[in-house]
Image (cartoon, rainbow, N blue to C red; front, side, top):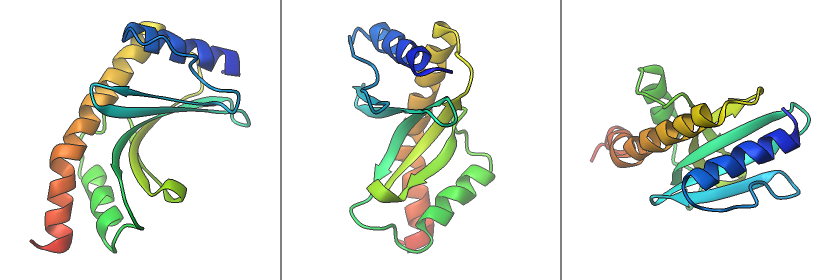
Length: 139
């Protein structure tokens, strides 16, 4: 997938939500807030793939011991991920569900994938986060 392909896919997705957007900036980053959920896009030039990430939680500090492992256990146990994988970004202390595209997806398929990812991420924010915290911190 070229940068131009990724740019077109992101722009088409944003237009489907009636949010005109430049898509990706010159560094290959983009983002949107859709129905209160944060979605990020990043084009990786070296691997020529588009990363899409829905934010589950942004930590103030590094996660306490056992927290990330608790989320990983949920993923391994089969908690639906909306086609994504659990992704902790240490530099911004954020936990995401992320999907990667190496081939250009049809617009309708990409839009459906993003809707599924966002809906699933909402479940992780609302239910899985509490479940993990309850186990780790034994409330």
